[in-house]
Length: 190
Image 1 (cartoon, rainbow, N blue to C red):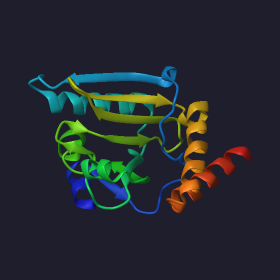
Image 2 (image 1 turned 135 degrees about the horizontal axis):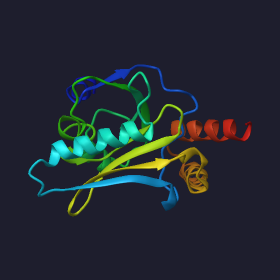
Image 3 (image 1 turned 90 degrees about the vertical axis):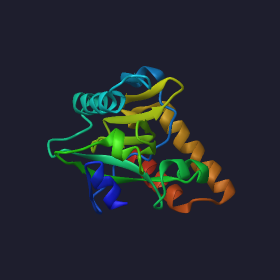
């Protein structure tokens, strides 16, 4: 996992994920989305423009902190995003640092961050939970967009509670259930 991420310009910082990191689920309200950018597949500089769109949004949204660090969602295991989608596995955050030379949408998407170069599929989170940054592929192109304050989203909170109940009924993924329970309890104590 470390070498492909280094090729993408991301250095993994082991055992440094803040305990306050929100577990990743969808369910946010549409009005929380900002900074959407779609790059069409037929663009002659497709990957370069997609990288630029990602970086511009990552810096303007506050995803990347002053040390160039943020959280990156990776599957539990060492398979690519395409294999992960087939397995339907839960994911975990990893703290990463953006290096001076990077290629998130090219080399990154060709490994853990997508299906192949220019076809991303990843989630990133600011260390303070203030923004999710998501990238995905669509029929005509690939896009990157940001979601403001996912930890404050009623839809995300509902989805987390639903996931917790659903996984408990099936007695699946105890680690994810524990993480969600701890996070929800810490939120109630505030």
